[in-house]
Image (cartoon, rainbow, N blue to C red; front, top):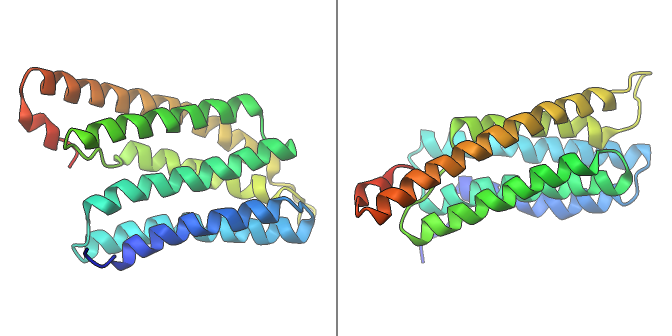
Length: 194
């Protein structure tokens, strides 16, 4: 078994920070929310760093292509579910986002079983960035220096919802093209996202 490279360790670290953030949000006072927001921002930033390292040093792997979007989903979905629990985010928005993430993860698993790794595309990455930017002020929640950024976070979450739906539809279409090509015996389609 090959050793994991640094970008993959950073991705795993993002997953590891998730339960810490969730635990902090169980005690939603001002200090814990600040600490949770800082850890969340650090975890979200690691997504950019691990991707840049992987590309710069030629360490893009199939494992990384699978784990990177999965880590994003674990981090963001867990955080959003906690925000619903606290009453800081609309349940219906989070349900739609989480349902989309589960559905796309399922499509990726099916494609992977057929030999096609559907890596995160630029649109999906931008969706993740927008979700992350929205979640920082929502996790922070409490006003600091007389400024309450939570309403801004909520509007950004609505914008992220629109992009989440759109990118989900695009992934679904791409999967349909792959699957139709596979059914027609066109094996070259299987490498479209690899």
